Length: 113
Length: 244
Length: 129
Image (cartoon, rainbow over all chains, first blue to last red; front, side):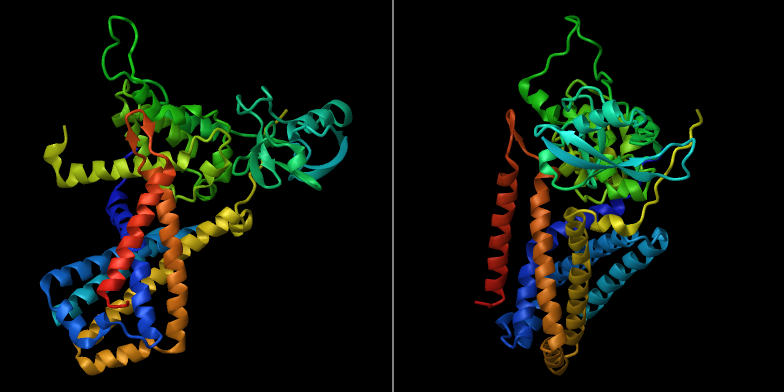
């Protein structure tokens, strides 16, 4: 039996799962505060724009977006299978493509900042 | 004494089109396990009832069955823990041979495929024994405790969904030998473990480890195999010069 | 004696057979919220790149009732993902020191402590307190 190429998709999934476990809840609290009307300093236009204008910040943000979307996509793929959707190749293509498209969009917008 | 209502799945391949439940009212001792009740049924009420058992002490791994929907060793499932009617079915995910007896060929074949035995790294030493430190023993000890009872296969939804999946116990036992300091067979076992139908079908539900009567923690073994296989893959493809 | 093994059908009913399978599905469904929230952030960067007016409109979008409900759900699911992830980490990454393995709770505990520190750091950096 041939060794699988699953590590290609699983490596970023496991990395993203760990990353989102550490950072996502706190980041959601930040946007939740904004949603409740108590906009934190970071989300003031000037400060966030200045931050995102920095090259290293662009790389970090794009990295977080990619790993978050990829690990979510991978989980969604497995959940679809668990729920009885057997077209795994089609599901995998759609969810991974969506993760890459989302990452591509974030890179595109970050480069315009 | 307590009268227990047992609802047992019956299937006779010669006469039944499909399985059905049969009820037995059994006078039970307080300290009995489900296996005692089944033995009592067979001895006094219905000699046609078929099931596997041997040791009655959670060592042989023969009497795995579903008790109220959970995979259990019938010799470890105390009646006092089950109020009301107790429903006994054959282990889930395996074809039913007859009554509570399942067809286990699939698991046995998979177990053989992962080479769960010592493949010596070095030639046997002159002194005729391999020496191992307590730390080296401890490294794999937990995974030696598997009794091949297959409760983990009955608990694993992925095995139910993907019958080709190698499954918890086979992977844990392969991992047991991979972690043994005397063993050099990891490369051969990886052909099965790192295949798509090896560890990769696991989605870490964790049910296998929850139902394991010997606390082997197959789920842990499978995740370790995934991580090691991932490191292998990235080394082989991105850093080929590190490959020995 | 003829063999005629009976294969019982597999249906989606397994999810409801035991609470552990429901907990598993809840854990897996966290991906919809974490993924969805991340896409919302990508939308936010689009607004940020378009200038102060677009950014102000994005903040207004965040303040709609639907967004608040979505945020509360996302926070709950994301936190559940973190808890389950760190609880399972010792299984995937056991640490053997000398002869003994570190107890699971030590490895999980270290991760929970790091999570708390990272979260506090991020919130402080964001000026949330």
